[in-house]
Image 1 (cartoon, rainbow, N blue to C red):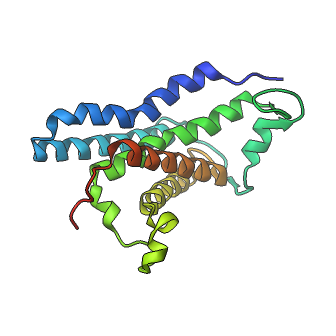
Image 2: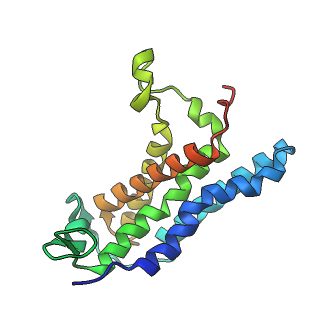
Length: 200
């Protein structure tokens, strides 16, 4: 039975999850300089998109076989096995390498989830799914457009990996990136969202 790689996970999770709080502290002195703050926000978003592209495409060796893995959650089935103690009762870690890939793909898109609305607050004012007031509350009022944008970026990356033979096209990667983006949006709403909605 393998143990959960706490040290490795914490070292990556702290900057990814704590970045939203750090952004609030760093940009606070710039609030009186709106134009400089706006440029800083856009620069941070562009820089992080460049990091995503570099990590998922440019730094990977070429020569992967043409392969599409659409089986949902195959990596979770490989990473965990039923039976034994482990992290949760009855669940144990079967493959540390696959587990690291899962966590990394989630954490990779967490900053994108809060950097996008942070750099472009007006994205939160885009039309929701329904104009009906009752449906606009709760689930419908959540800024899903940010999550879908992260999913679209992940999808384009997966397609590029396939076309340029820099990796496999995997449903699990798409799911994990989307989950990370969702976590990032929640961090934005918790730490970075202004008290008043931006003007349309």
